[in-house]
Length: 165
Image (cartoon, rainbow, N blue to C red; front, top):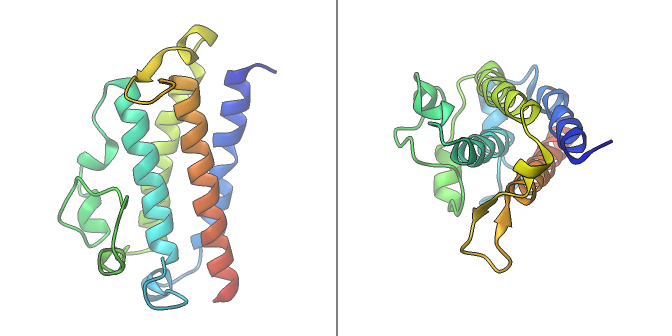
C-alpha cells in the first residue's frame, strides 16, 4: 500500500461516519449543544466539510465548492468566507443547517472532489511544498493527513453528541 492508498482509505471512511452522525435528525437536533458554548453536530459537520473544501481547493488551485450555488444560505449563513476556524460560541450558534441532507449534500460534493483529486496524485506530488510559512515547510502529503485527521476528530465528536441526544 502506498501513501496515496492510505490517504484514499482515510478519506473514504468519512462519508459513512458523516451519515451516521446526522441522519434522521431535525434541524433543531442538529443545532443542539450539550452545554452553553459547546459545538453542535450541525456545526461540527459543516466545519469539517468547510476545512476540507478550503484546504483541498487551495492545493488544487480551484474555487471552493462552498462558493458555488446557495451553500451558505442552506446553513443559515451570509458570509461565504467562514470556515468555522476560531468561531466564538455566538458564531457557532449561527450555523443552522436546514436539514441533515444539506450537510450530507455539501459533504458529498466536497468528498467526491477530494477523492478524484487523490486518484490523480503521484508520490512526487505528495512531496510538493504547499505552505513554506511553517518550519519545516508543509508538503501536500502532510496537508492532506492534517485534513483527514481534523475531519476524523470532528466527525467523532459529532457521533459522541449524537449518543448524548
